Image (cartoon, rainbow, N blue to C red; front, side, top):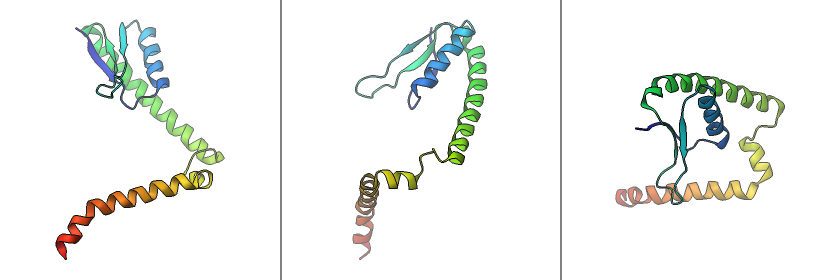
Amino acid sequence: MAKLLLNLRNVGDDESFEVGQLLDRNGIAWYRTEASPWGISSGGIWLRDNDDQPRAKALMATYQAERGQRVRDERQAALRDGSAETFASMLRQRPGFVVAVLLGMVAAAALVLLPFFLLRG
């Protein structure tokens, strides 16, 4: 019976591709299911053989630790050289979008808090 190794919700294509390569390099049989068009399921990377699960989980733990460190290093390098997207850079590039999102957040918070203010008065 197949075992789910990695749920693909919020997983980028590059990461799922790297995980597939990792499993292939280590001789672990796997397959991928795609996300449903309506967002009910997010897809996943499955192991064909249950016996491969402990080894695959160990490989994933190492991979995720290395990837996490690499992504943090890339983010720090981007912040140092000024190429990272920040709130200020987004505000300069797309001020209308940023203002619209902020107004939407304020409107949503006001709608949520409005009953409490009305009951209080």
